[in-house]
Length: 629
Ligand SMILES: [Zn+2]
Image 1 (spheres, rainbow, N blue to C red):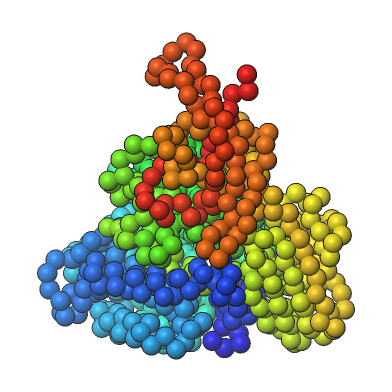
Image 2 (cartoon, rainbow, N blue to C red):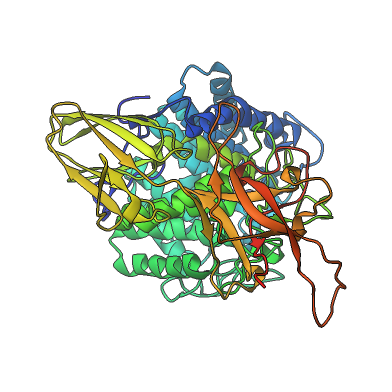
């Protein structure tokens, strides 16, 4: 990795953006931090697991069928090429950080060579529409995912280009992108699954080739005009129900909506389109005002994998797809860069530490696709749509390689910069090394975050920079201390402009008390319940932590007693000890006076992201409040 390896999303110098990303290479995460364990697990377990599953599930062989190196029927989903592309992207980001990984390098090189061989003379590259349905090429865009797959190929190429690994994949992606520009630049066609929009803007950023940006802008504005055959999906599912500039509510398939919005922001900042950015901001207010789970997840409905109505946020039937959580993280990063609004960093932190982190098992080789906030006692977890435990792979395998590419590039999302200095957006122990106005800046960050709220930063630079420290939205600001003194954040940041020439250390203390969280009264599904949180982490209660004979659904909580945090140990996270009761009355299913008497108990809650790592069993985030009579 060179000193200036850009990470994901790197607006051009001409883009209108409040903040800029630091290069991926600028931030090193400490191995013994929580992020450090995630990054290492991703590198040594998840990424190799994805590579082996691409072979086992037939995705590599699908491409080898194009080249004549394999025979037999096409395997799995018609868009399985995208699993290969996402894994390639993950490999490229990982190789930027650990270039000596020979096995990963071999995967990248051999797969890039396979893609080059599978690519048509004209640049077309899609195994399903080459092997199975050649006569339908570009003819069933409402369901073909051809541009979706192309988008992921392009994103892999962008990562490879920025990381300086694998020129062949860049050549392949550009040939395909050029064909797509030829085919679509003047056509009234869009893809049923957004993704190509953000990918083309990123390719423009890497190459400076304006037709990629122009096509992305065109594809954004063509949506909502009924161009796609709604067949049995419906227009909202396909993100074709309303022009984006007129939309005032997120709707339809959550992943498609959120990928589209990432592309919308990319186009808006590169084309200086304030109206388009305003549309994204309007939709953000809708999504995060009434359609987001406490864990940061999106998508309340299994049917159509869709957003629901405002405040329709059932805990047990949450679809909350992992890919939607990742898409939300990516969209919020773009919104943060575009606007500088701290709320986007808050949402990145929330979704990363809860919905995203919770989708991977401790072993790094099992994953949730849907991420419910309540797994009921007696749940039938036999279907992969809502399994009781993480599975090693899925027939629709979009989520695991998506996790791999996000985790491999995670350090690129922690810090931003602007003309005044640096902004610490997401806290992790590690080191930042960069330059501001040509002057080197080095910041050592020592913290046990998110287990501990103390963050010590030692700053070394001759530059007169402003160092901005984000004060998270979950944080009661009256309890925040800087070097032991109360501080008043402005717009969500404490901004420090000092003479840093003497290796100055500043200490930020964020209060890490266990908290009781109450839902908006309109969320009927969890009315009468509260949740537990500490720092950025949402907590849950698992059956495994309850006394024998107690059923999870009978547990009540006494919200007047603050939850008490334990200590983080080498082998365990910080748990919360909670006061409550267990329901003892035997009630009919329906009656005129339901008994809800409880006997007192104390129970333990653990971070939501760690649930389901023991034997499968019930879990819940929202706990009913004990009757006070
Ligand atoms: Zn997915």
